[in-house]
Structures are given as structure tokens and as C-alpha cells.
Image 1 (cartoon, rainbow, N blue to C red):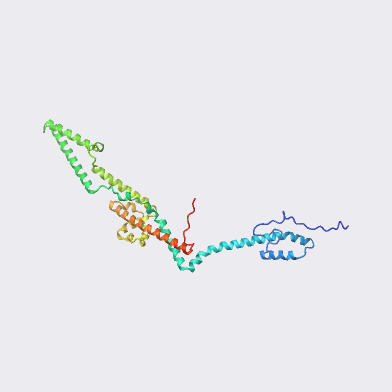
Image 2 (cartoon, rainbow, N blue to C red):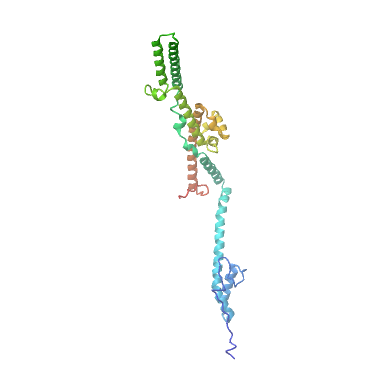
Amino acid sequence: MADQQKITQPTIDLASGAVLRPGRAADPLPATLSPDAASGQVASEANAPSNGPDNTARNAVQPELAVVGEHESGASEGALSEEEPDADPSAKADADPDLAKALASQRELRMILRQCDRVLLMDFEQLAMSHWPDNYALAAARRYRDLWLFAMVIAGLLFLSGLSGFVAAWIAGAGFGAMMVLLMLGVPSLRRLISARPSYVELLTTRRRMLREARAHAAHLEGAAGLVWQCARMARFNPALANARFSPLVRASERRRLPHYLSRREHVRLYLMYMLEAEKAYSRVQKAFFKGNQNAIDRGWQEVAAEPVPRT
């Protein structure tokens, strides 16, 4: 009878019943226990006498409670440490007016450098148009063209007069030969064998081509946002950008019609002068930005200092 009435002690299968997950208590225990209460309960149960089946079960669960408390305390400390740096920069900027001023200044300089960086893509030779045919060459070519047309008319009249019998036949033949020679000189490939001087039509074609290339380059620099009117904010680094003669360029760039405004060589030269002044201002903005960045590093303002771009 004594063997039949033997009390069987309850056992806990830790592999199947008690499941531990980060941030929560084991399944067989109440979920409302805080980390402090769980650790206190573990300490009290460790000091209590271990007599009977209930104490045996509690002793088996004690290591799991300790692990859960460590996970929860570690998670709470990690969350606090992640929240503190987020609120730190704004609090520092509100407390230190010099830090707030430096942060606003560096942000403005960084925006200017990003918006006006296409100034560095300017092609001086294409905008300067150094091989532009001058007015003297154009006038000389026009005079030679008029003489050629006059000689053609005279030779043609002599030939027609000989056909009608007003002049001798040999004069008409000479007029016809001169007219054919002059007509061959009108062909560009044949004229280059005799003289390397460009004709009036070629000079006009060269002018139109160079102007078209300059306008295309200006359109490439302007982009979709307009470069000239964005560079106008750099006037405090170069007062020449605020000159009144550049006002038509700024207005045309703001309306996204600057390439259409560059219809003459004078407009292209004015645009080139503005771009040269903008390039000077951009270099000064770069120096001011790097100086402010170095000052922020020296004073320990990590919020103001620019972070290097990671290499890929």
C-alpha cells in the first residue's frame, strides 16, 4: 500500500513547456512580472528551503527568469541610448547660439555649392568664340563677292552682244571664256585651289555655326533649373554678380529662356563675363565652406561638420 500511495513529484519539461523569447517571460509564468520583481522573486526563492515538489519546480525555473530579466534590461538600456543622440543636436543648437548660426551658415553654403556646381563645366573656348569672323573680314569678302558678280555680268553681256552681232565674234568668245572661268571660281572646292580666302557665304555660315554651338553649350549649363539666377545668390561673395548689366540674363534664366536670349555675339560675351564672375564666387564659397567645416571640427561640433561620402 505504501508503494501504491507514493506521491509522484510533478516534473516540468523545459524543452517543450518553457519557451524563452527575447523581451518576454517564459510561457508557464505570468507575463505581468517586471524585471525587478522577477529578480526579487528569484532571490527570495533561492533563500527559501527547497522541500517538496513545488520548490523543486521553482528551482528549475529560476535560471530562465534570470535570462529574461537580463534581456529586458538590455533592451531598455539600448532603447534609451538610441533615443538620446537623436534629441542631442537640436538641444545643443538651442542652447548655443554660435552652434545654431554655424549650422545655418554651413547648410546655406552646402546648398549653394550643390546648386551652382555646373559653373565648373563651362567651356571658355566655346563661349569666347575666338575664331569669330570680324567685320573687316566680312566687309572684304562682301567686296570680292560684288566684284565677282560685276565681272560675271560684263562677261555675260559681251557674249550676248556677240551673238546678236553688235560686237566682233572674238570679243564674244573672250567674254564667254571669262564668264566660264568666273563661274568655276564660284565653286568652293575649285576656288580653294587658287585662293585660301573664305568667301562671304562661308564667313556667314561660320558665324551661325559658332553662335549655335555657344547657345547649345549655354543650354547645357543652364539645365532644367536655370543656372544664372541660382548663382545670383552668390553676390555677397562677389559683388560683380549684382551688376545691373547682368539683369537681363538673370531674368531670362529665371524664365528658362536664356538660350533664346543669346541671339547675338554681344549677348554671348555678356554671358561669358557673368560665368567667369560666378566661377570666382564659387571658389570663394568653397573656401568659406571648408573654413567653416574645419572650425566646426576644431570646436567639436559634429552636427555642423560635413560627413564624408562613403566609397562604393
